[in-house]
Amino acid sequence: MSSHEQCYRSLASPAKPLSGTTSYSTQIPRKLPPRATITMSKFTQVNVPATGKTISVPTGLFINNEFVPSVDSQETIQCINPATEEPICSVVAGSAKDVDVAVAAARSALKTTWGKNVSGFERSRLLNKLADLIERDAQELAELEALNNGKPVKIARDFDIGDSVGCLRYYAGWADKIVGQSIDIDNKTKLAFTKHEPIGVCGQIIPWNYPIMMWAWKVAPALACGCTIVMKPSEFTPLTALKLSELVVEAGFPPGVVNTVPALGSVGGAALAAHPGVDKIAFTGSTVTGRKIMEAAAKSNLKKVSLELGGKSPQLIFESADIDQAANWAALGILYNTGQDCTAGSRVYVQDSIYDKFLQTLIEKAKALNIGNGFDEKSGGGPVVSKVQYDKIWSYIDAGKQEGAKCVLGGEKRPGKGYFVDPTIFTEIKPGMKIVKDEIFGPVLSVGRFKTEEEAINLANDTTYGLGAGLHSNDAGQCMRVSQALEAGTVWVNQYNLLYNNVPFGGKKQSGIGRELGSYALDEYTSVKAIQWNYGEKLDWPL
Image (cartoon, rainbow, N blue to C red; front, top):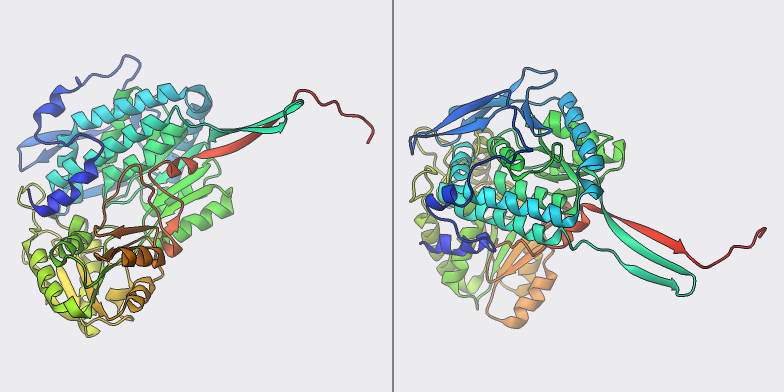
């Protein structure tokens, strides 16, 4: 196992590490419970060329535990394999009216078979069952993810899906522990207490960089709190969300609790954000789109909003740092998931005294990572997700060269098919350059230098974003000072980009509002009700 893999092995915690395929087919028999049926208007057999297998994938909208056609549209979304640029299949593209139907299904379930009508113990049981089913089907889900997203199968299986299983189990543990307070008013006559109630119907819009893991991050706390869901996966990567919807039925969730509507963002996402029947919207994606969602939420019914948005995260390398380890973490920070990560450490600043040695070490680390087909066990990264993203990344690489930055690694296009972008490192950067200011969402790193701690902090905080930041130092006092001075929702010290299901995650500044993961995520899906009870005071009237 490479050091790259070892660094991210911890992402699977607390789920058991997943490897091989045998255990997935033997843990739980593939059998639907008697009360659950799946009616499919469409499905397709997706070929997996690397294994010779086929995967059955539903292609309809998932509403009320059934896969159905659009009520008013014949539009479809074509899914592309980014490693080959070849079509995989097409799925139904939902319309605004389809969102209406899904929201109505979610509202009905909230009032009848879910929400306040189901105990936390039952919600916990179903979440654990769903986690077990995903663990059983991890290999198949990972292969589908690799086809549609491009990431290596081993990364999807062991890290993304391992983390997702752990996330569901973590929130299953919370489902029966969501409690309020008892508040003394007057012990002889009055009592007040609070209840944390499900906020209601939740619209959830997830991105294409971690399709399965972002699905779990959104679904798990919402279901634990008793909310119902209308999920809109990215139009680039809808396949695993549809496949997971099958498992929702198999786990035994009542119809309407989870609904999945693949759609263009400008159609389905916009309809959810503006829908008067949606009580909360959760979005992960770009800051530009986040602004539009917040505006639509405000103009419609002032629904609650949580946003996990972009970043331009810095890593600071101080002269006392372990250079080899710091280079490992810096490489991981920008190259994991081929740089398609909201917390990608895309700006690295190195203290002058160790700059040359660190840069050479970092270049060698980056060269060691193999970017290739996701079905090749040697690949530590895959292609970027789409032609749109590929062109965007190359426009930034070209801009870096034109603006005078020095490209010391990469920066040359590969011949042949596939949206592959090799690790690219720029030096001799300036604060105003596009590659330094903008979120690129690819394996493109800007490396600068600093002399003093104060200069390092100023460089790190010179951004409109505030999602993540890292520092590497063996000076404990410096670690405390700098970690408190960095303006970011998460600060990593002598590590980078590791997330845990019990630790909150979210941004500052233009990187978002609200928190995911940990107990803090429960606040995003509950509404606090205060009940004031008079059992002894008599009111005299008139006043």
